[in-house]
Length: 315
Image 1 (cartoon, rainbow, N blue to C red):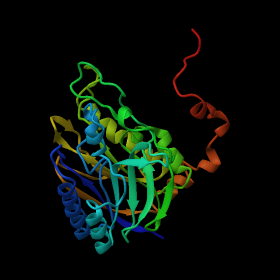
Image 2: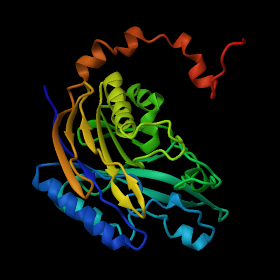
Image 3: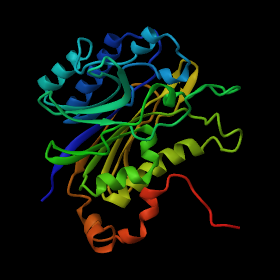
Image 4: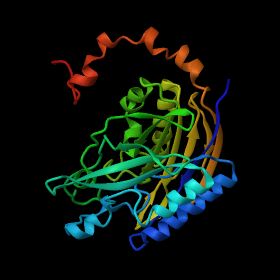
């Protein structure tokens, strides 16, 4: 018996430094309503959707830096989005920068995503595990990528959540490139993975080694492989276009458990792409080709969890 769900990937055009939270939330609500009109009951928004992608800059002023983070969710600026979701009975996935204050007054900073159900309640939280980039500025680059300066690795692992009649998982941006991300969720029976990303169209650190078309190719390749190898849907939403002088790739999409892209954004602005998904679609894959219980040989996988870097055999 099928379990039908209409989903939407809500791609965002650029968010500039001068844009206010309220302006951004108004855009998110507009796309939420557009998705609802198309029949969607789950909308996926991008990574760090509420602000510009601030890890592009060195920000030494603590007050300025904290201004990019949310200390609670929902808050005054985002409450209208939660209210709209409750009114429309549409769930959503939202990426944002999270600041957590400890009992001793110290602060921790995470790149976070939440799943909000159709009643406007937070049903799950994820914190980005694979933090890319650098902690210190890299001289001579077109732009910086300082996520390691501003975020610590997530401490929640890769949980899945029963919500909206399915088993839902989340990851963020660079996580999508790592097969372990999908496999850990796959081992928990994940049926739909939501993710947002902010990815520049060109890799400034490749120094002419990467052809221009490869960025988008690798973007989709990693998600399609993760979907197929774990028999899960993937719904991915990007921040796209020219943001503060840096061009971000789009390519927001919905990917079936077969690895096929079934819906794809066409532009680089605010755009909603929808697809009807059957959460049962991946069952045959999980019961045949990737039947974990029947075919996995964990006695041979020790290096995956015991070694971080590659170590070739002695010459």
